[in-house]
Image 1 (tube, one colour):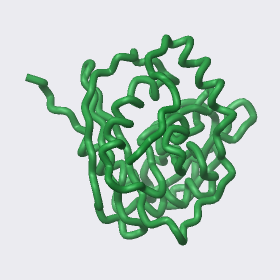
Image 2 (cartoon, rainbow, N blue to C red; image 1 turned 180 degrees about the vertical axis):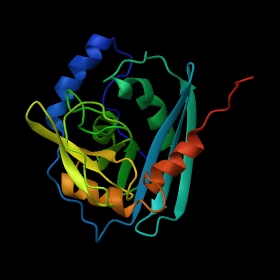
Image 3 (cartoon, rainbow, N blue to C red; image 1 turned 90 degrees about the vertical axis):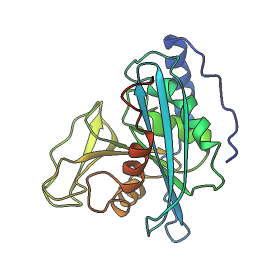
Amino acid sequence: MRIARLHDWNLSPSAAVALQRELAPQLIDDQALDFDRLDTIAGIDVSVRGKAARAAVVVMSYPQLEILETARATGETAFPYIPGLLAFREGPVILKALRKLRCEPGAFIFDGMGQIHPRRMGIAAHLGLWLERPSIGCGKTRYIGDYLEPGAVKGSRSLLTYRGAQLGVVLRTRSNVKPVFISVGHLADSHSAVRLALDATTRYRLPEPIRAAHNLARLPASND
């Protein structure tokens, strides 16, 4: 998979924040996905242990959710763990894995946030700009924002707002199971993000592509 270079990752935390503010206006979050033409989706996750990181990408057919291709990459995390700057810690190894793909997925689901972020630049948004393809974030826990608990039935949802703006949706992907936090990254809209997450979820709480990527990204307990 060919990916154009957008910027350098070797930045100080203050420069990284400044870059997020510079990039955020480029995000497109009102573009509906063409589900009739969508035939592949990819899930992305990263496992970090100490300074070692492993990224995994799993490409599945849509809507069948059959695995078509996988890719992994490992590397060192040069950037420190700082909330809000996850893309600078995990972005380089994710791009390394993505460049190994032979196919060009039609949309991406990241295990992490899209625009549910103080500067609307969660990892799904930031990497969506690099990929220039529809991307959404699926977070497992609340990061920022306020919301009402959605109903207990699968498909129930409520809006998540932050400082008066809607940044995402709190979505029940399984009945009577904790909800997930869905947000647009880039080149999608909220309705499309919710539909994609639900279409990609089967027996478990998380969409299948990121479940598979999580399993593939696991690092061993020891690097010996």
